[in-house]
Amino acid sequence: MNRLAVLGHPVTHSRSPAMQTAALVALGLADQWTYDAMDVEPENFEARVRDLPGEGFVGVNVTIPHKEAALAAADQASRAAQEIGAANTLSFDGGRILAENTDATGLLAALPGPVEGKCALVLGAGGSARAVVWALAGRGALVSVWNRTPERADELVRDLAGAGAGTPAEGRLAPVIGDQVSAGGYELIVNCTAIGMRDEDPFEHLPIDPERFDAGITLVDLVYAGAESRLVAEARGRSATAVDGLEVLVRQGADSLRIWTGREPSLEVMREAASQH
Image 1 (cartoon, rainbow, N blue to C red):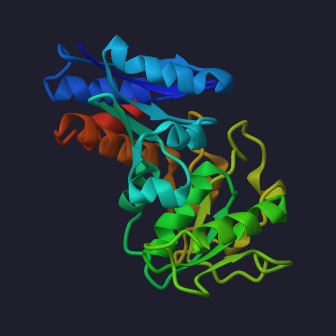
Image 2 (image 1 turned 180 degrees about the vertical axis):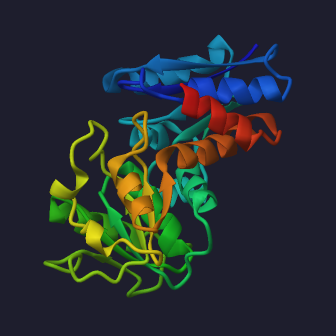
């Protein structure tokens, strides 16, 4: 068997096993490939990853809190993973660990249109936010980054602005300062924080005003915790375009499966399995 898994801590909430298993079944690969979830504590991560090829693993997805460690453990990394500073997809090939980041491509694929020239606001400064900022700025968006701890937003901007090829030109990337958010003017808003995962009111914690949602705004909420998030519901209720976290999960998961199998998975099958989990 060719084994696959998602590694995280915790990981029981992950929709990836159901989603990827359904995709493998639809591809006719279920008798040759398996996909599981593995809870790995941070201090054990690198050693566990290095043991996996000997256990029949072809590759793994990596989720919180291991994405930076996944990059560090790799023998070879794609340009995207290197510049973002994190990896969510590892492949095992001839004794080498190869790292990729499909969070960035997954986000871009989930968006309804091109982002070049659009004013974008990214909420958060963690691993997912790094991938989102890299993807948007690299495609020519004008990206502002907000974080509850402003120093982290500033650090993210400095890191990515100095990452090298594929990053934005000067002036396209900036941390949010003062009341810049309340001034509005954003056409694309991406929530990369965990706010909303426990059904708390996102507007009490995030610097956005639902009154400003309209048909000219696209909202992406990476949170997926069962039903439609309050951010997504509010945006759709005010005629904004909304993309939920499950769609982004499906897109990045499909990219990972292409890397491992060389086959084109069914997005519809993956969506259905992820939404029913």
